[in-house]
Each structure stands twice: as structure tokens, then as C-alpha cells.
Length: 454
Image (cartoon, rainbow, N blue to C red; front, side, top):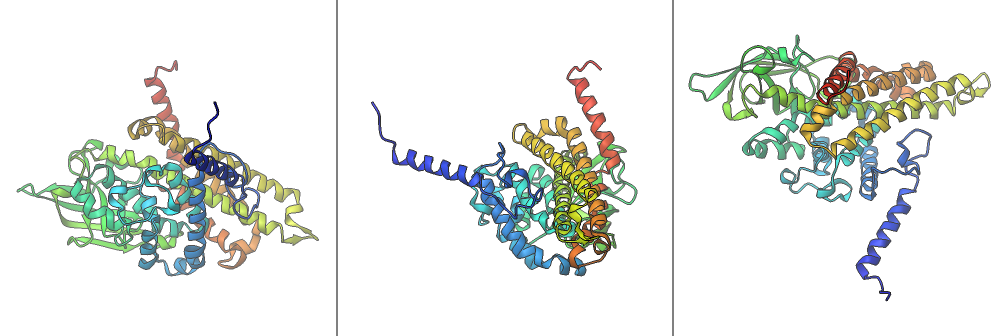
């Protein structure tokens, strides 16, 4: 006996058919390699209708609120408070605070793209960062998420409920800013040997913090500092994480004059006899090193996402410019040597993007602890791969643009800016050299644990 479909079943089928049609629609300008393949009528197992709604939302946000302002913000070396509040009110900041929607702390904040909070996954977060990076400014991206994306997760994951309630909501709304303060003048990637100290007072109620932090993104604007300090002996076993607040006496920040990412607020921070309540300890005393390490995977994937979209922007701009610029009576794109440059740029960008998607997918299938252990080496190599690709594409784009790419503003202004910002990606979060070595060492170590016959 055949039964008619219920109204709910019919509606569900209609939605699925609309989703399939939507998946095959061209998104963007259609310039080859200018967007991920699934934007241009290719199928993908990673995305559904909610991801496609989100990418439209983020493209509109970036083109309306960021791209027209980038040059002015870069020149002024600021990211205005009103913009941060706008980004907070539209759910952008909450969407980059982790791979799950922070429902408990984001009350009253809309989810971008009308995504259901319970459906938010790592690929939604991926799309947000990737689309924002179409603004082609590392300064803007780091100003928005450079502190938030790495300074807030330790609090979300390991802090007390009181601290979360006090810190997280205003940061997600763009009313307050936060940064991660680990790097020191003499301790960058060598976290285990940092020297900033936090000594308990005799009554055990406070820590007295002394030391210096350097190259801290957002530091001059931050209200909160997630700070790595030494509370115990030498090495990784003596490190803790503390929340230090800007209005605590003894906290001094000053802007550093750096090559790129000009609107990100790169800072030098001094802590001089700063009195911090013991309640501001994040996690357990002398157990901070593992918290820092668990934060690195997210930071490095974030850097990889940004670097690869910037590489893609270099590629897109090169194709557009080469398609209209003529030399010796023919367009640049008609010279085999130029097509060869574009081909090498494209193969690296697309390969990196595919690897990135695969590693992001693993975050949806494993626990945070397992991913930190098994995925650390792969993420380190991905970070190196993406930044090497960015460096390559920026250099080749500069060659294609010639003198116009060497000039601030105008047709080549995007290339000039990104070329300056390459080293802000190849060094922070672990330099290429350290990432390459770490990637191999880590995977050999894991293989030995798993019984590989080496």
C-alpha cells in the first residue's frame, strides 16, 4: 500500500532539493583559483547549506565594513573601537573564539548566517576567518582576532566560572579586548625557558609579577592579558597562566614599530611588581605549559588559514592584473612565463587548502586531547606549508605587478601590503624552521608510541 508523503516529509525533501541546487550555484566573481573549489560548482563533503549562508554573510560583512576602511586603518595604525563593537554585535567575534558556538557566554549575540548554535562546527569558524582575510590586511585580521582567538581560549577551556563570566561576554561583544602574552625578548618559541616571574605574597592571596613580554598582538588596546609566568622552578614544570588586567598598577604597554600588520597593535609590555589575586590563576599552578601547548594547534591552524587566503588573494590579483596589462603588444596572461608563475601559485594554494580542510575535519572527529597529541606534528607542517606558500605567492605577485606592486596604494597596493606582512606569518606561532623540525619529530614520536617498526 502506498501512502502519501506527510507535509513535513515533503517540506524536508523540498529543502534538500533547494540545498542541492544552491550547492551548484557559482559564488563570487568566478575568477579561476580566486575562491575554494566548492565556491565554484565543485562538490565537497565538508559543507552544507548553513556553511553557504555563512560565507555570503561574511562576504557581505567584509566588503561593507572592512575593505573600504583598510588603507585608512593601516595608515592610522588602529582598529577602531566602534568597529570592534559592530563586529561583536553581528556575532563575528564570538565566531572566532573557538570551534563551537559559545552559547553560554554569547547571550543576545546573533549567530552569523542564521546558523543554529548547536550546528556550529570547525568549518563555520574556518569560513569566517577565510572570508575576513579577503580584506588582504594581516593588521586588520590580527586586530580583530589575533588577541581574541588565542588569548580567550585558555579562559574558556580552563578558567573558573567566575573568571569566564567576568571576561568572556564583554570580549565577545567587542566591549573589551584580550591578548595572549607569552613571547619575551629572550624567549619566543622556547616557552619552557621564559623568565617573567610570579611569586606569592606571604599571606598567599596574591602573586607579584615581574617581567617583560614582546611582540604581543593587541597589547596596547587590551583590557585583559593571558600571561605565561614562572611560578616554580626551571623548565616547563614551573610555568603557570595568569589573567592580568590593564588597570592593575605596574602594567605598562607601548606600541612597537614593526614592518607589517600595522593596525594590530603590536606591543612591548612591562610588568613591574603587579599584584594579581590568586583567583586569577588559569588552571593549576605550575601546570600552565600544557595549557599553552594545547592552545598552539588552534593558533597555528588560524595562521595557516589566514596565510593561505592571503596567498590566494595574491593569486587572484595577479590573474586580474595580468588579464588587462599589456607588454610588447600582448597581455601579460598571454606570456607563457606569466602563466607558469600563476600555475605554480595555484597548485600550492589549492594543495594547501585541501590539506587544511582534512586537518580541520579531524577536529570534528577526535577529542581535543587526542588531536593535540596526534595532530600537533601535522598542524606544525601545515603552518609551515601555508606560510611558505604565502611567501612564494607574494613574491611572484610582486614580479607580475612590477613597479606598481612596489608602490603603496593604487592598483598594486594590496600586493605591496601583503608582501610586507609575509614575515608576520612565517615567524609568529613557531617559525618555519622550528615547525618543520617539530612536525617530523612529533610524528616519529607518535609512530614509536603506536608501535611503528623504525
